Amino acid sequence: MRILVTGGAGYIGSITVKALQKRGYEVVVFDNLSQGHKDATSAPLVVGDLLNQDDFKKLDKYTFDAVVHFAASALAGESMENPYKYFQNNIQGGLNLVDYMQKKHIPHIIFSSTCAIYGYPEKVPVTEDESKKPESVYGESKLTFEKILHWYDTIFGIRHINLRYFNASGAALDGSLGEEHDPETHIIPVAIKRALEKKPFFLYGTDYPTKDGTCIRDYIHVEDLAIAHIQALEYLQKTNMSNYFNLGTGKGYSNKEVLTMIQKITGLDLAIQEEPKRAGDPAVIFADNTKARRELGFDPKYSNLETIVKTAWEWHSRKA
Image 1: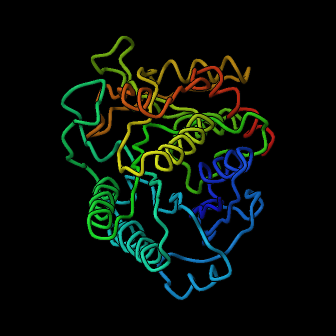
Image 2 (image 1 turned 120 degrees about the vertical axis):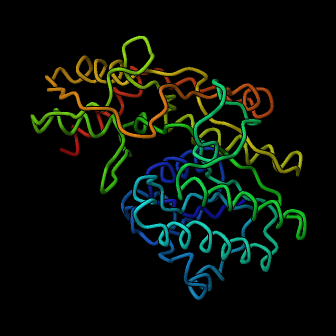
């Protein structure tokens, strides 16, 4: 089987490409390299942009059995400053992709969605039945594309799996690939960089109603995410039924726990500067992954905090 992976030169995409190849799939990557890196992909790379429909002609020499769709703008904060970029990239780019799939009779797509579609959840752990009320343009754009996929399924029979991530983290177990964003906003790479540079890390909020006063979030190792995409692809091949799943660990770690583990693994001092909490940051969010475990066989075996931080440290320290 040949799989088209959009955004396959990026963080999660590149690690998923390697996992697909290891499982025996043939892979072609389509990426505009705005956030991805040419040297990160182990598959044939077609440089192209989903917003440019002429770029799809570069794929004419291939036929595909399925698509794994990562390509998107993915910073919630930035989406509130530049909504046009997020609606254009995440909705119009995705729409061009499924139109291409319909014309080329590609039957299946795995979509990299997000828990941001739920907004501030009414209950934790968060199940797939949680109400959809995004609090950012980013979350709204992902939810809109989920709706587009529903209609392309209804009208054209393109089956899809929406994988709603919680917090992707860590790096490839072999140290070959990791998180390299510009700008970087995620707590683990930011804290590691600050420790390496001997600069203070700003901790926003220490008076939440949690065990240590800091936010609690669900961190899932990127290798577990990669495996989940393969499980979702195999589910589609077997059932030919569209579905949606939360991808998280079923528990959370506090910001202080994360920072303590970073100092333990790196052996570096991290100057923590406490700041007032930011508006809109919920105290606790973590996934209920029962459905993914039951129907996909999902088992986030690498998603303990020590493995997450250790692999991230090995990657970032080597790149420093």
